[in-house]
Length: 192
Image (tube, rainbow, N blue to C red; front, top):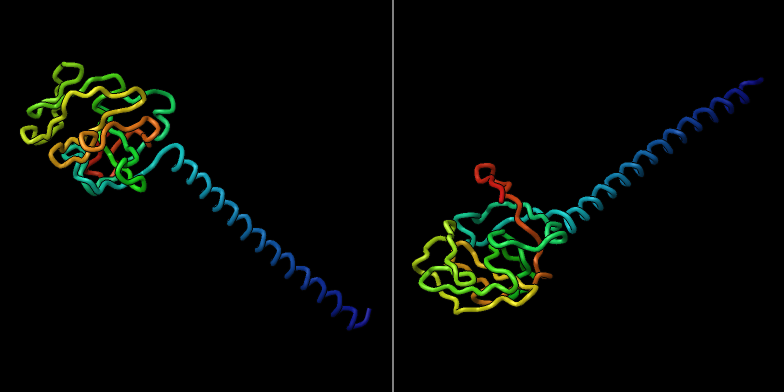
């Protein structure tokens, strides 16, 4: 074997190592991109169909939930059961379908509701609401029967809450989910 043959063999081996290294790097980059893409897709599916984390800008749920709190919303709960009185929910805003609002379920389909002198009556019985602020300035609600497949919602900060007293009952299919907990800030953590 002469010198030119030796250079040729070693040159091919060097090019082979370089090509393998390049293919290995490309393979790692593609694998990483696929993993990131899959993780993003899974996160979007979870966010869309299972749980949402959302920030609160409204004062209508004071003192239960403060503006600036971050909450976790379970989007699956009402796929398996109906809402219950007293649960806190996120619904599409009937006044602006691009916004969502957070309220408390006060009455269900078939219930008769009335608010007089700051006191809530469901089916003629007084409802104890220790979470409501400023009961003495709560706007009223004439006796009203909630239609089937609807819920009646109100904020805990009744004087400053735009709710079913203003826009009427909310259809079941407009409920996004049940609020599970305040997750942030840590000092505000509480579950519902």
